[in-house]
Image 1 (cartoon, rainbow, N blue to C red):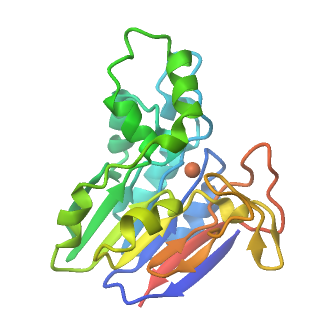
Image 2: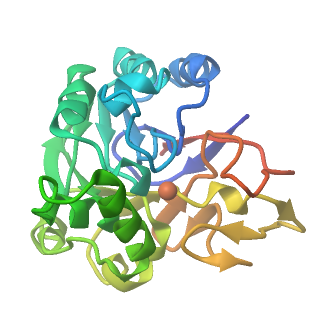
Length: 256
Ligand SMILES: [Fe+2]
């Protein structure tokens, strides 16, 4: 794991953590604490996998690292969270448990904090799932199969971004999917966008990644700075079945 530092004209220092995927978190928390950030931004995919828990327990408590990781974050600094694609199926109970850690969830909304505006653009897969009124009529497995098969046709809820981008202060947007940037975000007056999801391109050779979910083979966006967007290579070792090679996990730290 490495600490990647970026200089950016942000009024607050930001520890940026993405894509934990229920992997071990103790070192992440220890290293993040040393950075003494003003805030922590978690851009989704703390969950691993697309399955609901088999025993009926809330998903976030059946994945043992998720809530302790988030508690570790809020013990360091105010923590803001936006939903990734792996959080699409979280129940209201799951959401309450996440909130109980002290994390502020930003689900297609923004808030003002420390003189800046912080927004969270949810994965379209979660937004779509939340609009469906089918949970009582179809087996969960059928709903899941249909959603996952059609996920690339869903669009994020971006209506609120117009109001967000008019806020008269520094605007920070947490947006799990970097592939949303060019279509939905680049033309908005937003100062800094944080994204994850790509895992650095899984295998890195000659300075570029070879595969990213949502972009496929030889993706254009994998990690680093793209216009006003910073993309993290994430905190987890693999996105099955593609191995992660020559591509360390990272904590991103952004400050003036
Ligand atoms: Fe993702």
